[in-house]
Each structure stands twice: as structure tokens, then as C-alpha cells.
Image 1: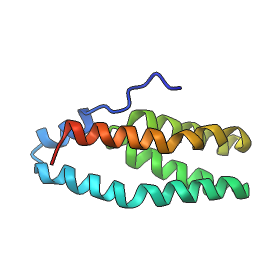
Image 2 (image 1 turned 90 degrees about the vertical axis):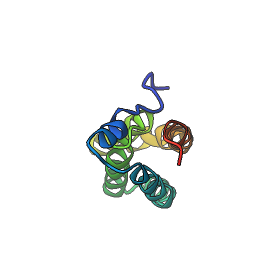
Image 3 (image 1 turned 120 degrees about the horizontal axis):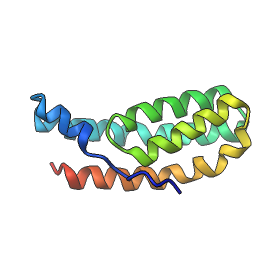
Image 4 (image 1 turned 30 degrees about the vertical axis):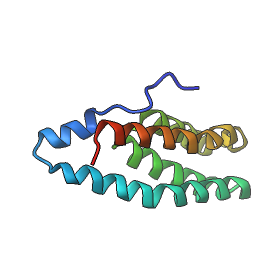
Length: 117
């Protein structure tokens, strides 16, 4: 398991410090909740089909969107999946993909706790 924190609030706090409205955080959380489950499913399906390009694309998107929200542990898993897909080690990414839903749930819970509605 990664030694990175589940969530680092600095990215979100930086947005708020720059003048973003607190409601923006809730909008971003809503977008994550609407987008991430489908992307995780697509990632799992691409892995099951052995489609390295789709795995790479989904992992890259997830790495960026959740990493930008401070979900560090999740972003690290996605980065490692992306690297595995890029290097041809796709079968080795299966445990990482399997760990992503829990990392997402933990990170999302930490994000919501740090920045409640």
C-alpha cells in the first residue's frame, strides 16, 4: 500500500485562497461523484479486455482529475497503472486497479470531511 496520504487539502485550499467560492468545492465533488465510478468501471473493463491504450487513457484521466483534487493515494495508484500500461506490464496492474475503488472512497470521504458543504 502507498505511504502517501489519502488526501492532501492544499490544492483545494489554494483555490479558496485565490478567491474561489466555497461552493466550487462542492461542485467539484459532485463532478467527481458523477464521473469517477463510470471511469473506474471503464478502466476495469479495459483491463479485462487487455486494451492497454484504454487502460492508459482512463488511468491518465483519473490521475489528473483526482490528483488535482488532492486525492494523492488514488492518484498514485492511477499513475502506477498508467506506467504499467505504457510499459507493457498490463497484467501487473490488476492489483492496483482493484485497490482504486477503496482509495477513491477513502479520499472522497477525507475531502468531504475537510471541506464540508
